[in-house]
Amino acid sequence: MKNIILTFLIYFFLNHGVIANDQIKPIIEGNINAKVKIVVYESLTCSHCANFHKDVYPKLKEKFLDKGLVSIEFKNFPLDIAALNASKLAHCKNDGKTNILHFLYLKQEEWLEGSTIEKLNSNLKDVIKDQNFNLNFDSCIADKNIEDHILEDRIEGAKKYKINATPTIIINNKKFEKPLNFKNLKKALEKLI
Image 1: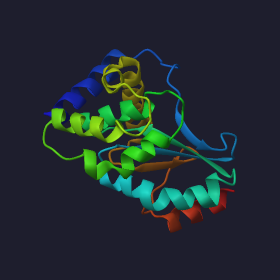
Image 2: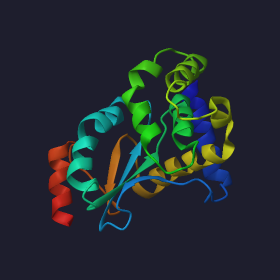
Image 3: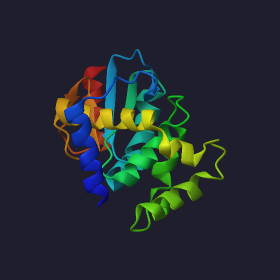
Image 4: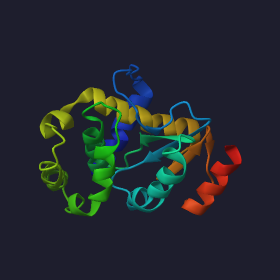
């Protein structure tokens, strides 16, 4: 049912257009003026995306982001309503920072338990309540501007890059086609720097 609702929302926005939303800041790390720009399309309910944040991202940060050689933008490609709601939390402060996003991936197994959206939302609310994120869970989930921004990311990824799985990495506007591990990513980035 969750996938049917998400599919309907995407279909609606594809066919009825969405007003461009410049109010929501993208979530970016690294040197925004770097020659090499990575875009990651991901879904907060995707275990492979969580593995990217746990296994690949820390090395990427150390070798490339912290040195100002690369920027990385995390774009939304929610695969279901739970991912859509989690993405709303990641964007809710609208500060462009990654701390909430990384936290949600780190705690994915804790909040991604249950078979109903009500249970998943309850888990999300519980996981973030003691973190000093200063978020109003209900306001974040109800924010239509953030929802539009998230769905626009997904539509862009599907149209521009033919994305059908997460995570999908784009490096300087080209889809990264090799298996996603740090070794392969490092080789590709070193050729561009």
